[in-house]
Length: 172
Length: 330
Image 1 (cartoon, rainbow over the protein chains, first blue to last red):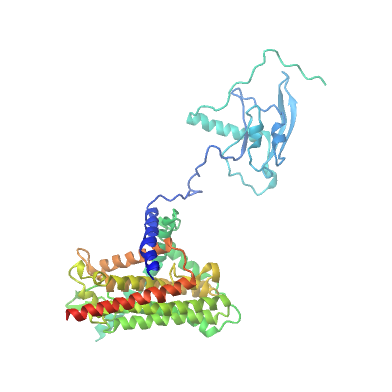
Image 2 (cartoon, chains in turn green, cyan):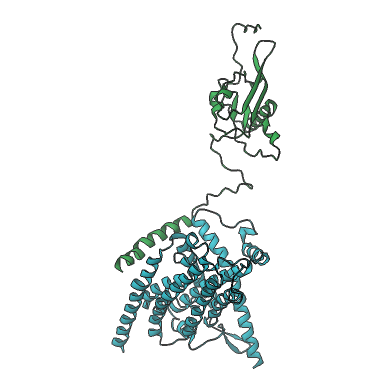
């Protein structure tokens, strides 16, 4: 009886005081459709392909992202510009296969592919989830417009690296 | 004569409507408070601050299909929710909501019926409520319902004893069974409240009242993790919600009795008596919800041991000590 009474008069009031204090704290609920959820900077959402300041894409189609991808969701075909620089003729990411691990952005030597914060890209058609190069670049353009509007400094190098000698054209 | 009848009808109508509104908004109050204890928001979508949520819930429950499982005992299956709700609502009749008011030279007391055996009446009526749960458990033809019904019988009978012992402490010093009279005795100063004369009785009463209304942490008759939903497992739609109305009506009644017997009912400065009564009842409801948001459910043997080995002796001891003091004083 005394043990029970000590529980009732010591332990339970202690518990009650904790819940009472919690009662006046701010709820942690995010009212999602009404307000934007808060993201950590490291959040991994929809991919984007970056451009240099002159508007040309960074990707050189080296294939490291596709090699690193554990879900095998990146497909690319290379091509060459007249000046000998490489670029991807086709660059596709299947967002339904993607597991958003972020290995592609870690593998990329050119800072060309990143995972953004966009997560609302649902569709009722599976074909809509094959993101082409143009779509991925458009994602970047949106983010970049936002960055310029908010006057945030760019995190990545903005100029294309210039070789002293022009690259040799590939001979087949 | 006719005027008396009209006044009586008006009192019943107003208090019953008030009780139903109070039940609806107790659910809202409970959801909000428990949500904030858990760092959530609670209902926010329906109306400003989700204030229309009880109305939305009521409408939803009214339009839901009433599934009646095969093999139920039809008569008792239908009777059980009605019985449990009626019993819960009836006991509000002897609780004074406020003092006398003068309207057109007539003195009207704000109580449906000032029975001279008010407390006995409350005991009788709350005991009837058990029948609703037992019949629901038995007539549903389901093992979970039956187990819930059996549990609630055992629990409510055990805790009714200590509930009574708690109230007897007050009766001994008030020398009356009329609740209106007990409230009047506590007027004047805050020190006249029977809580200060009978703290042990209040403690016994409060805990038994939580158990009596099947509220957490004594909600074993409807323990979700063990019994699906207890005695109302097989009920749906409005029949189910009538059980819930009954449970909340019980909560309100028990809070009203606690504030009348121990905390001076409608007595209080500045505000009108009805407001004071409501403040006290809401404070008790808050304690109920607060405890629900804090404590986990008791185990069944703990529940029984607590009733018979702690509350029961404590109640008896309190009566003994009170009796000694009364004898010594006279």
